[in-house]
Image (cartoon, rainbow, N blue to C red):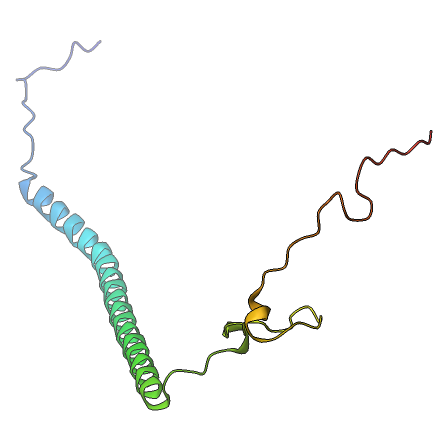
Length: 134
């Protein structure tokens, strides 16, 4: 049987891996940069599109404001040129003493008289109305 071989004990030394670690971290950084550069490029394109859209909306708003101001100015010029519209017929004041009910009425001062309503007791159907019927 073998008792473990003779000789001196050997020591294990760790190899120097700093150069390998540096190369691996450099490659990892380059891969991450390549991936993030695509994302950054797309983000830049999106930002440019958003800026262009905002610029177009600003221009459209300026055009709409200019059109509204132009329309207002044209309306003011037309109103000054034409003048106020004539009053409508229903807006005219009623003629005093006019025959609004179709009855024959006197003219002049007698037409200003205010009609009195007939007394309730003197009109037809005045009084107590009792109906008997079951």
